[in-house]
Amino acid sequence: MKYQSYSVFNLSKTLTMRVRSLISLVFLISGFFEFDVVYSYTRPGPGKTIFTPQSDDDSSPEQVHIYQVGQDKMGISWITQSSTPATVQYGLTPLANSNNATGVTNSYRYLFYKSGEIHNVVIGPLTPNTEYYYRLGDSPKGYSFKTAPSQFPIKFAVSVLRFIYIFMHYAGDLGQTEWTISTLDHINKSNYDMLLLPGDLSYADKHQKLWDSFGRLVDPLASQRPWMVTQGNHEVEKILLLHSEPFTAYNARWKMPYEESGSDSNLYYSFDVAGVHVIMLGSYTDFDSESNQYKWLERDLKKVNRKNTPWLVVLVHAPWYNSNVAHQLEKESVNMKASMEDLLYQARVDVIFEGHVHAYERFTRVYKDKADNCGPIYINIGDGGNREGLATIYIEPQPEISLFREANFGHGTLEVFNATHALWNWHKNDNDEATVSDSVLLTNLSLETSCKV
Image (tube, rainbow, N blue to C red; front, side, top):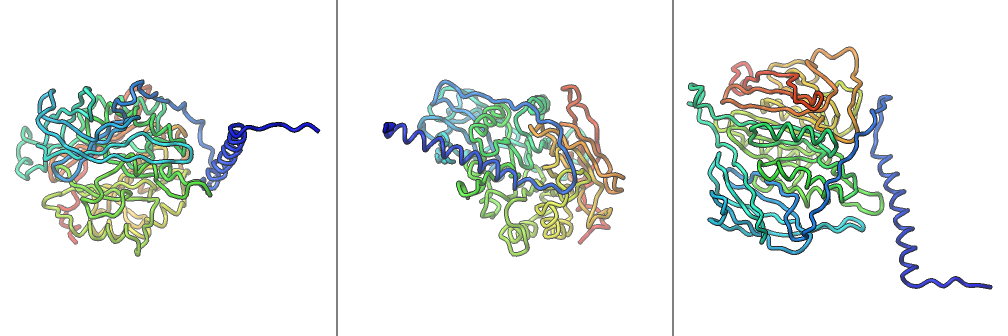
């Protein structure tokens, strides 16, 4: 009888291959059970995923993005493949040598993947509406960003030439496809101050190198203007039996300033910018009336001073209002709406931006499924350019509360002119050109006498 000889290396290799096969099977099972079909719906074919390669220099900063911290500070996050100091030099000239700040470094593991060194440094205090230059670690490469404007005084409403307005971009379900590049190109051509993204960033879906690719893809924009994000279902990344901790990559890579708003989780937080109070909610963490998120939201809304921040804007991933066939009756939408809609209505929220559905839709002011002049305007903006394609089928007839809907990739802009008025534009990617397809002038709800609480 002949016996086949196995070295320790060959045995290890064989076991590794079998484990990888098991993981692949679990990936398929996990993905299957995460997909909840209520209506008979076939999504159009996926778009081609773009992979952005790594630099040859392991010590070179990459995946740089910035985020606002409090009223006058900026967080800077970047990744290196080798150990480098978590330090930032910054100043008002390209030399960037006036100030220094030190932060923290961490990393994470996900199955066989180990991330690079993730650095986070907070710098400031900073002057509003000002260009700053900065360098990361011991790298000679220079970057720059512009701080957002400060809160506008009420007096600016009387002089058009003295208006200070904030120009925000909204691009939900971004992903990394040819359409993503088109959307980012359109955003880059606009003079915006801040980007808000209601979840589903990289569409890595457990493939961690796609998180790295996404970070490199958005680096040119995210290193120049603050990107404020919340999570979507594609950030959960749990694997049955193998990885039980949700949001591992998201929390490590995209730390948001949740502590400053009294939140205990990176999945929900709030901040003030230029007279706007922005609330980021988490669709994929607990949201019932006994949850930490619900209790935090109650406290946060009570602290809002509409004299200081006249505008109240909310972002959430899973839509509470949606007349598209896709993503109907999911618990993250239905149950969260049942739990929290009253809170946001009583607070007189001006507008709620939602993602998840890969199409655009704007509702009238609504509450409890009916038009209500004191309710928020709901806007579904989950059309940034994901790889899953568009959700092209809508429920017919179109509900009366749904004013505009279209299945197309694009992004939106919100220009807040003063304490009373703002302009919302949705730009669709039409033949790679940004075309304004929907526009509405918003009036601040806190000033409506009939809506006083």
